[in-house]
Length: 109
Length: 115
Image 1 (cartoon, rainbow over the protein chains, first blue to last red):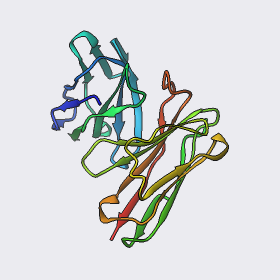
Image 2: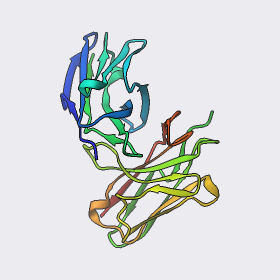
Image 3: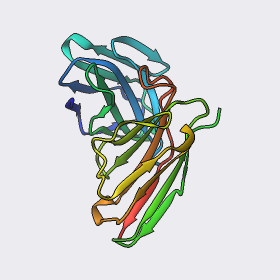
Image 4: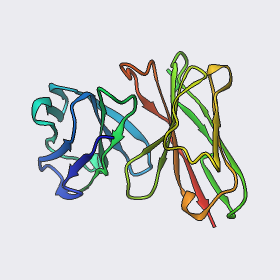
């Protein structure tokens, strides 16, 4: 399978601060998605981004496929951003997603 | 558009008992996934269906876990007999197809506690 490493494992921010989450993966991928799991356990799809850059409001993501990493940027963080952020990848030779262990974000008011 | 429906929301059973979870995917989604998420870890794929056929079940403990997707719509995951280490959240997800994973959507999950 594909190894997916996320960093940092834990992050505490003051409301309004910016942050960058990183996802490294061990093989070429044809699909990469970022998910947010809220404190109630619901996983929400944030971005489909196997390469390039996308933005959605205060969130943006960049994947550099040739260097096997992806970054998720959160600007002007809000308490509702708290939860766990997962990166999931699918490789060319695999038919399933591999998830990282996540970055647990706590935004304090 | 209705989301992925799962039931029950919570379940507590004793070890060696059996349990079943139900999932109804988004209408029109051909691909259905069951994941196991242990506390503090990312989801791990147990089984993936394309319509009513199994695409991948390499990480399904087949001695105790079984899953079916009759008629290619809703699906049931069963554990028999349960062990303490099966305590986890069981997530169902669906997507339009398995190639693009377009519209990949998770249900709210079933939290299983085995005592």
